[in-house]
Structure formats: structure tokens, C-alpha cells
Amino acid sequence: MAKCDYCGSTIIFGGKRDANGRFCNQKCQGRGGLLALSRQIPESAIKEQVWKFHQGPCPKCSGAGPVDVHVSHKVWSALVLTQWSSTPQTSCRGCGMKSQLAGTFFSLVLGWWGFPWGLLLTPIQIGRNLFGIARPPEPSKPSAQLEKIVRMTIAGQNVRQQSAQALMAKA
Image 1 (spheres, rainbow, N blue to C red):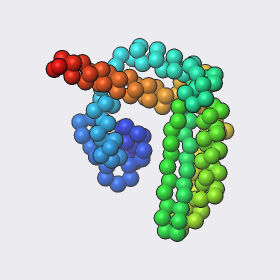
Image 2: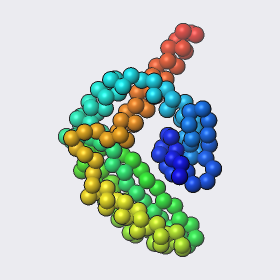
Image 3: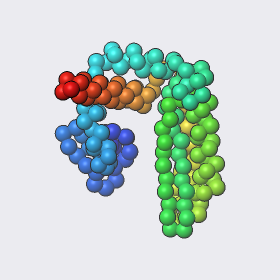
Image 4: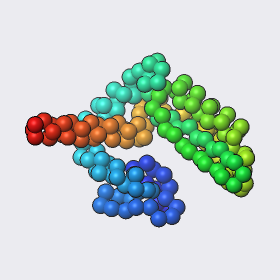
């Protein structure tokens, strides 16, 4: 199965494809240009920024790092309607674990009420949270997910700076 080049979601049906890659929806496809720009940033600059962010304070609680990406998974259902999500969060281990525990509790309470998907997806999302709690990212080195987030952030900052400079030049 194909994966979205921007968000990493599995593409089951359709998706969008262009010169920058394959994407799950139009929103991710729109961010594909930023993805292409992010690939042009020198690897040494990325590694330095990733390491600084990884060893810095937690953006959620300002506590000690290491900081990495922790994903919490939720599902809620009502009769024939079921919605599920996976939300990445850059934080310390403690904040990531709190988010995963909250997702587990949310899913335990609100996930089971839909047929058939609520009954099927609730144990999956709970299991994903428990797996994330039991096997967090390696604290001694930044994850590939963190590197991608930092890379996209730097690319976004570069685009904003170029846009601001272009506006100043016109003024």
C-alpha cells in the first residue's frame, strides 16, 4: 500500500499525485511544495537543528528533554458513525505518555458505541497507545519523525522569510 509523502498516512483508495510525490488528500498535496523545498536544505543544517531541539526543553511543559515525537491515538463512535485519529506531538516522554493515556481513556469510554467500526477500531487504537507507552522513541537519538518535523519547520521559515523580503522589495 502507498503512503502519503507528507503525513505518512496509508493511502487505501485514490489519493493525489504530482511532481512532488503521492499524497492522501488535497491538503497534503498543497504542502507537497514545502516538502520539496525541505529536501533542498543541507543535511548538516538539519542534523544540527534536530539535535538542538531533541536535547532542548519540552515545548509543552518546559521540562528537561529529550524531546521527540509521541503519537496519541483516539477513536469515538455513535451508532453507525466512527471517527479515529492519530495525533503526533513533539514533547518530552512524560507529556507524550500523558497524551497517550488520555487517548486510551477517551477511546475506552467513547470508542465502542459504533457498529461495526467502533468495535473493531477501539482495541486497535488502544493497543497503539499502549505500544507507544511501552516502546517510546529512543532517548539517545532523535527519531526520523522528529527530523521530518524540524525539516518542514525550517522550510516553512525560509518560505516566510522569502515572502517577507519580496513584500519589502515591492514597498
